Image (tube, rainbow, N blue to C red; front, side, top):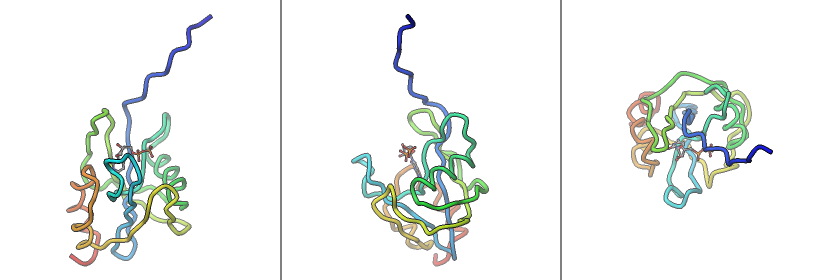
Length: 139
Ligand code: CDP
């Protein structure tokens, strides 16, 4: 009989984050977990699953987290290496249908360039602010 082993966690691969910008405002989502990140704001997204492209992962994550359909787009900002070996990447995506709802977050907010600089963003996303602001109004 083969011995059953716990599968090692996949600590490689990509975490995708979506920059949804409508009328010069960026959609941010407020995290509920883990406790040290709860209350902070992020670009919505999550871990790509095995075999998924970044586009696939963006479409699935935003369907799950916001209840919207999106089309994948261009990279924005730099890669962010995560402590677990994954890499976090932001993509500009377009809303195809639906209105975002916080299905997995505490709250959603549309921010302009000034508000983006003032809100409590998760540390990993802060480096993207200058690139994001180029597409936002009000700064
Ligand atoms: O939803 P899923 O469990 O796949 O992923 P997640 O827990 O939302 O994100 C995976 C990792 O990426 C976590 O360490 C998040 O803190 C990080 N992340 C981030 O730093 N910035 C984002 N905009 C999205 C995720």
